[in-house]
Image 1 (cartoon, helix red, strand yellow):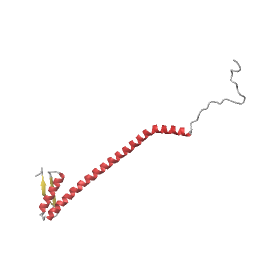
Image 2 (spheres, helix red, strand yellow):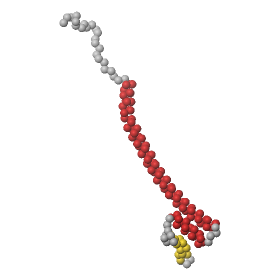
Image 3 (tube, one colour):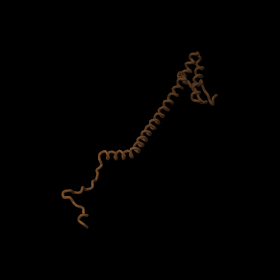
Image 4 (spheres, helix red, strand yellow):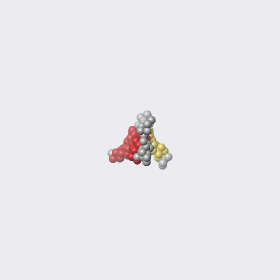
Length: 138
């Protein structure tokens, strides 16, 4: 090879080594955000599932509370119906047996039964009297 074909080195000048580029802050941040985006979906689904189950539990608790209050209200309405029957009987100036019949009929209606009685205890004589007695609806 001829000397002219050889690369000539210029004294004092060196060849620069190849550069390895370090990621900048913005590149690293973009990478982190992309990575977080891949994991964010399952986290959001888990949080949504937890929230949904919490709402379902609260709904079940509220349903039980509503059922309890409804039962209590129904019982109070039945008690008031009996009281109203007695008041109607008193307002109509019914005799005592008519009032007992009115109350007995109302209680039988509320409890939907054909078997019931109303007993009165005479403390003075030690006797029990049944002015209202139904067996099989008669």
